[in-house]
Length: 386
Image (cartoon, rainbow, N blue to C red; front, side, top):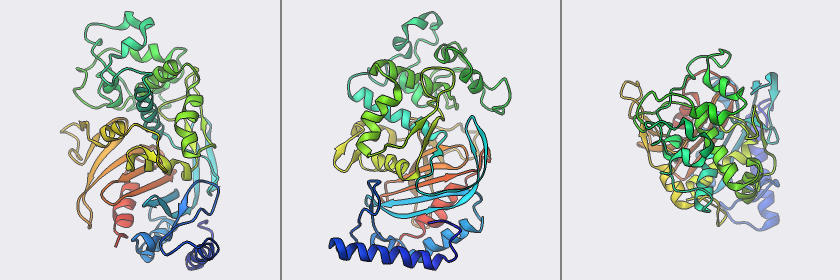
């Protein structure tokens, strides 16, 4: 479905007709979905799982009319079924390449997921720990990189995997300036011949565990640790333990200057595949009965680990966990807790355990710094639940 279709009503009727015909052929009953494409998803109508189709239609129209500018894709999953899947069009910018012009998006369009990559890296850490390839989450990070032991000052020896996963190691890091600025530490790391050493060499600005500060170097350290522990390229390991069990085959993971792909923002995936990652965190790490991520890791990730600084205007509303955001939001259906994998430009996986819902959004609002996608979640998706 595309936003260039002449009539939203025609699209809605066409989807419902297709669904009914499929049920006639397969014999499925009311509210039961069917796989309409070879992407591993069971599909259902929104009404069959408790959504108001008319309110979802109004959301589609609002996006098409640019009330929420430059949204590229929006998918809703409930009860394990894909119930809403809409693709739009707009401008895009590819990481490391530049502007892509005006793009008409569809189900097969690969898209930058930006910092959702961090959350994927977290899943791989959890899988590696569960498999015994890595030590416990409170293992000192310098134990994993003994060749850099000379950088381990007495104050930095206490930095653990947990501190990296919660963005709270205390290492000095500057991502507040534009990536085009040569003083941007993420840019400096990406151009370094040894990114691990670059990150570990940063001085300590605060005590480990004291506060949250965004640092693209932390997932890079974690990815390097997983790749080393697995004894093979990170993408190869990820394909085996994470992507293959989910039926995901169309993945690109770009590199910068090292043999470890960019663990902060380098993944490019399809929306229908990214949504499956959200289902894992809704269903205790399981996909269709298969335990992909340890349930204990998912439980720890769904619990808020760090609060944002008190000075932050949204203190209490947003916190941080294991390379995911944790939000407490007010809605007309009551307060909800949301686990959010978030990437620059409007890339989001919203996991809402209270309602058993996963919402995946892709967009092109790079460096906008607003909560447009959160507004879509609260003002439309949650509101549409009966």
